[in-house]
Image 1 (cartoon, rainbow, N blue to C red):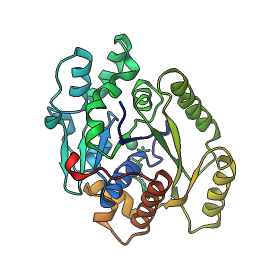
Image 2 (image 1 turned 180 degrees about the vertical axis):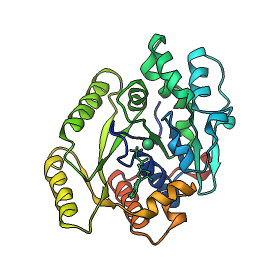
Image 3 (image 1 turned 90 degrees about the horizontal axis):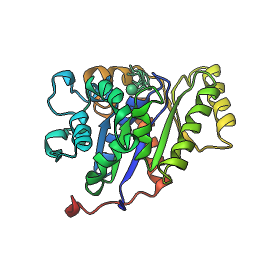
Length: 273
Ligand code: ADP
Ligand code: MG
């Protein structure tokens, strides 16, 4: 479907690299810049839901699974039931542990790679940006997310050189592009959890830039490691709300602006909502 909506998938099969934190703070950062933003929690661990204060996700009646099941069964989906408005001006569709069972069920489903794409299609006209937080694997859930992506943002932790993992991820993105979703493009790499106070930390960032920068855009903004980011996750708020003057908050604000500049994202007129 043609629309001005940008679907950005945040993916890396390694856990603990800052996918969820980046989804939350980029999403809320984009909302602060005036975009209509929908966040999709697409990890059965439901960390994104929890980090936005939705902690009882396993007891929720309405999650992304309900919508996916509706698509598979060809029954109508009530999106109003699914979408939760967060007070920092973003909408979210939560997930829960049922999504793990759903992934197994997908094996025998028609068009199994496209279920999320079909499910989100009616929402594209309502939002400027849809951000999808992936689980830490390259299984069917991540393939479904990549199949509806316009762009993929790859958070890479500034700790080691994840060359092998990156080759596998880029290989998967290429396959999805050839076989399922020709639109998909890599938006870039965001270096996260960097210890910029030490020489070792700084040289790790330089090494990542040298190694990946020739082939893939590496954003100038580096997200530093900072206790405020971890605290914000625990209290269910963004870093802006929890510690607006922290280095991490400033960095996510800068990353947001850099991404907007790189995309020249268009505003949707508010009457279109
Ligand atoms: P992923 O989704 O890739 O598994 P998360 O975003 O959940 O990674 O981050 C993993 C952990 O690290 C979380 O506990 C989170 O609060 C913490 N964290 C994320 N970014 C930062 C940061 N910049 N500084 C300190 N802790 C962070
Ligand atoms: Mg996560």
